[in-house]
Image 1 (tube, rainbow, N blue to C red):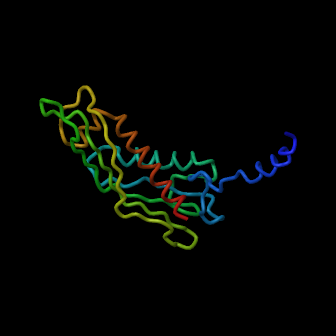
Image 2 (cartoon, helix red, strand yellow):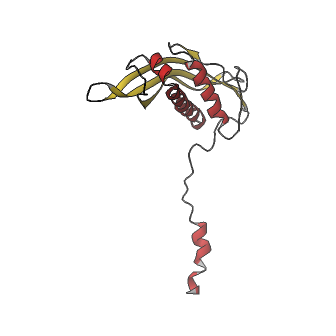
Image 3 (tube, helix red, strand yellow):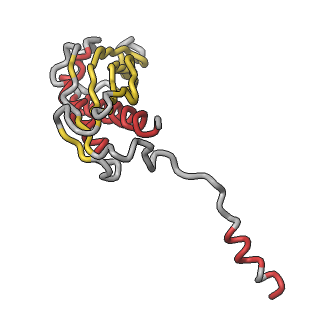
Length: 176
């Protein structure tokens, strides 16, 4: 029985599978320490959409291990800029009375990440699209106007902005 004990250290050393968790690091140039994220521009009719999206993008980047200092201006070693170009809503589930019980919301934006030292565009997506689904809140009017929908369900707007921000920051940090 003791004859196989010498194999334990070898088995332990060779037990690594070679895989690592995604999203743990960044391959950005080492000199990028400060990232500016100025207010996104809002080309939609939804009030405060630009403020909500910008705040969530800043928060998402700050939550990525504190490697970068985020500033609200367009200054720093790099800058993330964005224009929210569209916000649409469509029913995806209806009940027996043909009333919508679940909506799909799609946010579209033009997002760029630029190195301010070299003025080189490091990453961009001119038509980044993010889609999510939400149940109809109790007081919803059944309107297909995104502005009206988010007036009735501000939590849905926050969730949409959070998920969009996660997608943007992941795309930027894992692109390298």
